[in-house]
Image (cartoon, rainbow, N blue to C red):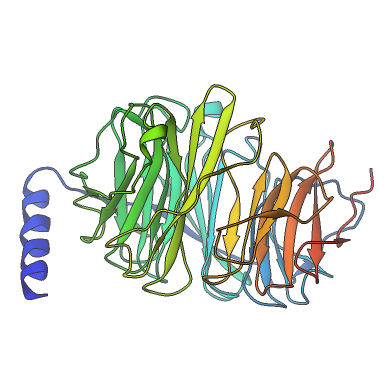
Length: 375
């Protein structure tokens, strides 16, 4: 442990000598004394669903940050917003019912500065910061102080020829360019996730053939990265391989999806770790049919046994740790899910005009519309 700490100290010192710099944002405190209940006649677009427990949760709309304290029956407008580039221009992280961040990046469409909102009191007060970082791909926080930004000057849709990782240790007031070492550019990077203040992962799409995936791990708070091996069956070496950020339900146990794509042939497997991400064991590869739209597969696991994934807008459930899956819902066009138990969960589904929020009490077999959109 002492050796790792010494390496980290030396690495940070060298980075500071070679252009590692701090970005201090313009800050403003915003206070909302009253929490306004959102009118039920509003038509909303939703993303960033994050249920903390059976009562408390968050979701972002194109007009505001919404919070519930009663399981989704009532939603409060805790931060009015006007987002023209929705949903791609919005990133959010909520650690619990009190602490969270919402990042608005519309620079590529209208040249506006990147804005980061943060709260530590459940949305009663917000700190507004303007950042000089653009092309943000992903946002992650492991604690109320330690967070990361993954960006590229080309933006999320462009080639990743200059991947940048920024780190904050003061909740987002100041950001340091990590000048990340060990990340290749022959991929499309789409996510960053940290399990604690030191250990994190970057995922993406590997266009190169072979048995490798784009999956990298850092144990130095994002300064140094190394390839994380995921075993790929030989018969999939000619497939494009995509990974989504892993999900951990404790410090040691986690899971990550790997999507294999070749033409119209799309298959998926889940790899598991029991040692905090040091090693991964591949799961069964199975096909759910041709994929429509992008290759992003929303998923959620509550433990080693129960998990859900969305494929082509339909919900599948596993009760054996991803060894088998069954279609459990007739609710179509699901874009996000958030489960707390094997029975209780929430989903955001697109109805052709906007997104609506649903809740299930039977593991996804049936759903109740919590917030009907009235045009």
